[in-house]
Length: 203
Image (cartoon, rainbow, N blue to C red):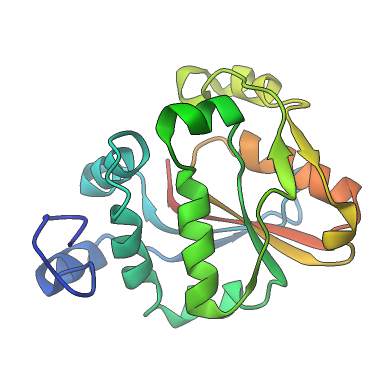
């Protein structure tokens, strides 16, 4: 099923929607190495608005999990982003708390990450980086509150898995980067070489 129009399509993205959203795609790779951020770069496909925003919200909150397939079908044809992703040793999702997982029934970032590794043949690790506190949803907070809200909520369970590795974290939306930065901080503290972040869209 096409995640944008709902029509049945064996590739999960009909040609009409593919052509339409292609006009909004930006395929950005932003370098953060000269900033104070712990992550080194951010890769994303779209700005977070219009039908892209609607699709991500439906995927994240309305149990329309099939929508991730449409985004990945779109992504896999972009050589620029795919080549950059393949430079990483490990792909892992931004974790959610056990309570949030129980409420939602799935981790949307894990759905993207797990299936992205199958397409690009990159090693996948889940439950290595874990969320140990059920903090307030970032979407309900301002920029300063977002930064303090994620302090100390992530922990690395298996430190040997990431030693000297290049890690790409996967999430759905990038807003202030607070969540990505806190996760990258934990990974870098345990000897990850480089940490990047890939999201479907940037707000």
